[in-house]
Length: 148
Figure 1 (cartoon, one colour):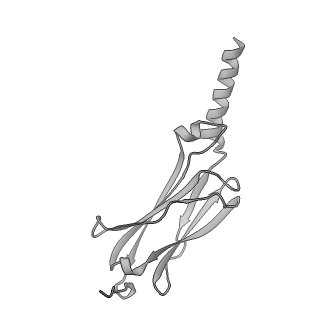
Figure 2 (cartoon, one colour):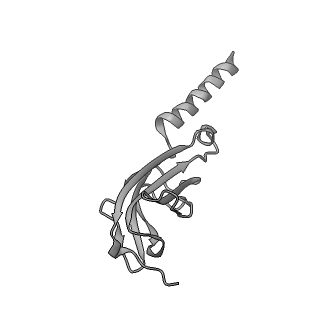
Figure 3 (cartoon, rainbow, N blue to C red):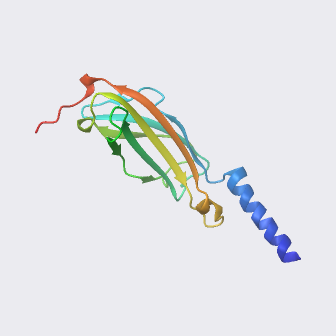
C-alpha cells in the first residue's frame, strides 16, 4: 500500500514538473523584432528567447531558411546547444550568406527543443518544443551574384 502511494506521488510530481512548472523550459520570444539586418556578405536575423534557468543542458536551437517560390531550396543552420545561456531573456543572431540567397519571398523557421533531464524522464519522452516562423521579402538589390 505504501509503495503504491509513493509511486503515485512520484508520478504526480513528474507530471506536474513537466507539464505544469516546465522547470527547464526554453521558449522563443520573438524572431526579428525589427526586419533582418544586412551586412556586407551576410543577412542576419535576431532571435530572442527566454530560459527559466541558466546553463540548460540539453536544450538546442535549430533553424532553416526556405524559399517560398522554390520550396526545394532550403538553407539549414547548425544545431546549437543553449548550455551557456543565462536565465531570462537573451538574443542571438542567425547569419546566412547572401551568395546562397535569391530575390523573393523567404520563410525563417526556428525551433527550440529541450528533452534532457536526469531527474524527470518525461522530458526525454515528451521534449518541450517551441517553433516560430517569420516571412520576409528579399529584394533583388540585396542578393549577391556568385562569380563562376
